[in-house]
Length: 235
Length: 253
Image (cartoon, rainbow over all chains, first blue to last red; front, side):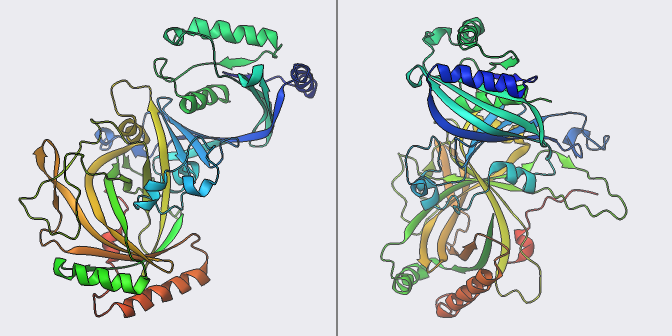
């Protein structure tokens, strides 16, 4: 789940960090992110309208998210409907096996990639410009990662900047084991109640919240995260 | 982004054994590495109608895009041996991709048209790739990779399979390939060689990470020309036709 505190001041941010530190969390280091918003290029017209229209009447979005805690990885979301995870590093080059996603060795060895990959956001920006135009770049800086409840609860906080202008404090909350039976996970009321107790317990400042998922029957960590960013960082 | 220098050639099936033993001797590589790929060729769904304004150069192009994944022959079929010629009666069958479990890893690739010029001794072009390792969609009952392409704005217009071997000569890669296309629908998908004479395609290339690295490009070009000289009695490596490698979509103006 994500919360964006738009009226955050240095005081409220410090206060929140102090409160969290009092819970004696495991501090897992710093992080940041890059979030890009692309809109469909209006000069690309659906074929059935090509004879009558000079620009496309529809508006669709493509978002890309690159969090620094997922190295070499870009998550993308198109039309808030379909998501993909892109990697630029091959497993055998990674050295360690702890990366969540990597290009399998076989994919390189059998010749499917040259091994010299571009991050997906720059691929879109360079070669899919006829379909997608880049509109906004949002950066997260000065982020902290806190682990609580023996690693079951993770808070990631970050200052949000749109083209260099401060837009608020982002609080990303991740619960690994919710204690909710799998059959009830798609019940939005259950999820809402769970986060409400956490918000109260850790006295999280008020802000815009989002816990939408792409498909409640099949949760997808990366795709759902990108969906929540797309709603929260919608300035 | 990768800057690729390329020469191509073709050999009849009868030269395969001699070619392989020569390349083994040349490279010192006793066992060549396998190449096995499935490629979907895609085209932008929308028609691009940029506004032409006087004095403004429009640099945006629409490109065909390849989606490449590894090809593992159907479990039912016997393992393919590229050294054996393929006859029309042979059955090379592959599983239908999007019905019997789906593939996660796809490399999306768009290549620029090779650099123009009369005195090009090798073909040189820039290739952009990005690799999808996981996909997911909120649309029920559809493969999420096909839905992803759909949402990205691309239609699948053709497909082909590639099988062959590769050698490494310094930093130059030598590929000896056969291309397969769909034959007709049976159980699974039956394939046939694109070229029924069973000839092999040969691609020799050197990938350079930066297109601005002039020194490495000229060194790479020299390496390819040296290889061309070494192998001239075996097959003649040539610069491929630039216009055949143009991936830009032609839109009516």
